[in-house]
Image (cartoon, rainbow, N blue to C red; front, side, top):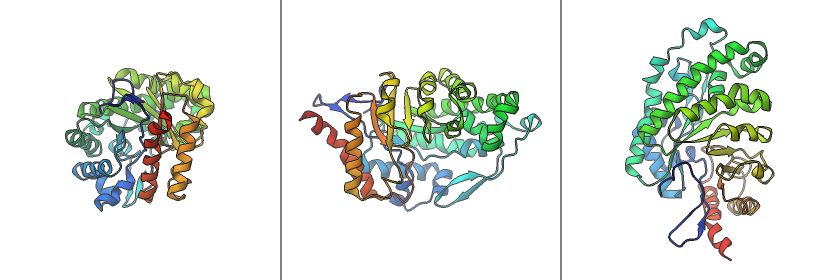
Length: 338
């Protein structure tokens, strides 16, 4: 099942029944299927592709996602990153404190960096093995990458005190995002998910000025389907997120999907949003099925809904809970037919 250009949501299957797409943000729990670690997967495209293939073989999601990593572009731009075996890598220092520091950011070096190459190679290998499965890769959003360069606290202050400095930094991060997204599409990705978690701190007006406009420019600069993911409660940002031109909005568990669904045009997919920890890690399988069924029922009137998790699943997510989530989603066709 290939992703239709610009569309991700329910399509008719061979029985002509409406099919709900079931696409958890599933990467790290697959490490246990290959007996590997986060760090090894982030530096080894063949291993990460094997992990993705193992995930697909076991769970059969309708969209397969690469491992989520917000540090890749930051590392490629020269920022120091700390790696541990079973936790997401994190940026250790945020060296961009003024415009002078921007002169030392070498985007040409970033474009050839190993960290970006690994993900492009992962996409290419996985696409070759699974030619008909919709495949998504991730990139850091312009504002979030700028926040990694100057720290989240500093960028929050600088949006008020040093707007020109922030926008010059955003010009660099946008250039990086455009290059990386194009590279991932060229490698075979069907869609690219823009991770912009730092933008949740912004008001609607400031969101558009410092994030939304740049995501819009990113979308208009690449040929491919883009999804926007922002962690936390983004209810106040939904109109701006729609305005970016992304074809899907991936929303966290803090957002009440039925409350915002009418604000999202039918051509834009609503992706979410089972809680990745409180439900997917902490509950028993039957409770996961109940929570998932409840969400599906609440969004039954919206054909642009894709069942997913609110964010990436932690490595410790029980596989039985992922299976329960998938079964609950697969129940939809039978439920809707009755």
